[in-house]
Each structure stands twice: as C-alpha cells, then as structure tokens.
Image (cartoon, rainbow, N blue to C red; front, side, top):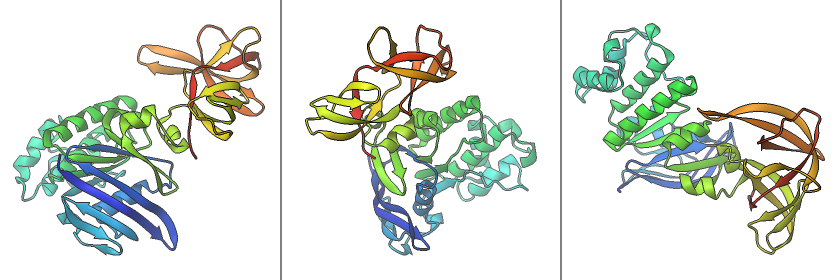
Length: 345
C-alpha cells in the first residue's frame, strides 16, 4: 500500500510548554488509526498539526510524499492537503439545510448532485431539505461525516466523533463510517476516549501520555502485549498492581505471589492483571481481602456479570464473581491466576 502520511519527530509547544513531543508513525492508504490517551495528552493538537492549522515546533509532516509542515512552517495550506477534519462540535452551518451543508464542501466535485448521492449513502436522502435545528444529534453526526467525505480527502481526521451519541447510535455510526472508508480507501485518524470505538474501527493504535508516544502498533499487538500503563488504561485491559520480582517468573504482591513473564532481574515491577485472572478461593489459598463494593456489569448483549472490588492493605482489585453471593464488608480469600505481564510507566 502507498504511504499517505508520515509523522517524523513531531513536537509542539505553546508559551514555552511542550504539549507534544517526538511523535513518529506512518500510515498507508486505507489504514485506520485510533489515537488514545488521557485529557491533555496532545491528541487534538496532533490532529490540528496534521490538518495544517498550525506549524509544529519541531519535526516533519509528509502527506502523499510531499513535505506538508516542518519546524515553524506550514508548507501546504490546509485546503490543499487532501485532509478533512471533523471537529468534536461538528461545526455545521446553522443557516444551511442538510443538502446544502454537504454541497458547500462538494463544490467543484460534482456539487449538489454529488452531495445528494452522499446524503443517500448515509440514509438521509429524505431529509435533504431539513434545516439544522430539525435534525437529531445522530443525523447531524452523519451530515458532518458526509460533508467531510464530500471533499474526497485522502485522510479523514475525527476528534471524538461520536461523543454525544448513545451506545446504539455509536454502533450504527461506526458501521456507516467503516463502509464509507472502505469504499473510498480513505485513511482515518480518530481521536477517542472510547475503547469500543477503537476496537471496532481501528487497525492501528497510537497512545499518547503527557504529550509523549508510548505505543504505536497494530491493534492486536497492543491488546495482547501492552508495554505501558497508559495503554492498559486507555484500552481498559485490566488493572496494574505493584510487585517485587524475587525469582525467574515470580513476584510478590499484596495479593500474594504471582507468576510473571519477566526474566531473572529482581526488583520493583508493575504487573498487568487481566479481568479474568483474580478469583475468590477457598481454604487457606490466596490472601484475605475485604469486599468494598459490588456492581453489575454487562459483558455483552446476553450476559450481565457480578463484579466485586476487594481491598488488601489499601490496594484495590476488581474481580468477577462467578458462583458466590457476596456482601460489602465480607472477608474473602483472593488469588491471581495465570501469568501477569510487566508494564512500564
């Protein structure tokens, strides 16, 4: 696949404060990248730099094998980058109807006829003449997406695109977006806090933490072999607990001795505990813990799981309750099964 975007040593600072530093990745035509991380980690700044809305402090942005930005300079203006940006607030025109919203972006690319075709493709052909104030939140999301795609971009940038939608509408929008991207082989970069959006749409994941890049890998690698605490938190992969390695493949934690994937080097470690690993055990196995809260959590459309949070020496651990009925304040014995993976951060 042809490379459509390369980010090299990209950094940005405002008023002497660095908000993004040394970000590196590349994407091919049709790639889909989810950008995750806590608020203030530089996610939206990254989109603005790629869109050409501001010059970087340092580094290079190469789009379609042409230098688009470099330190202190925007070399290719936003309107000439073949990049479309969908803002979190959508930024639709309040005075235009649904069709005219899209036709405005499609000027020179088929105009109203092209816009009507896009409107039909997102299932809103019957709402062509509806004014903005008569469109639902989900319909406005679709209009904003169609308006961006009317520009026929090589790269589509989306900043928290589905934040205002409920779970059902988010799922519908993800399905629609995926089909439109695949049809045109458009490259997607999507900033999101939603694990579901990332898992459903992304092929690659970029995780930012305090402006720095802690992961830039295929989705499967990030899921099955996370290397940093920020990745675990961003994708909800489990909990991280402290421990002390004392032998090859062994560590001591407040929740007892655990098996690990670490080598022979002793010392402090941080360990990922996957949701399925902690268990309530009988007899003298495990360590004693206090149940501090109980909740119900759906694992999918057909099943609701009971979840307990237990505490040992001030450390909390969430676990699935498989057989027993627990009560808050009850004392139980807990054990972590399987291997725990070490993570940095």
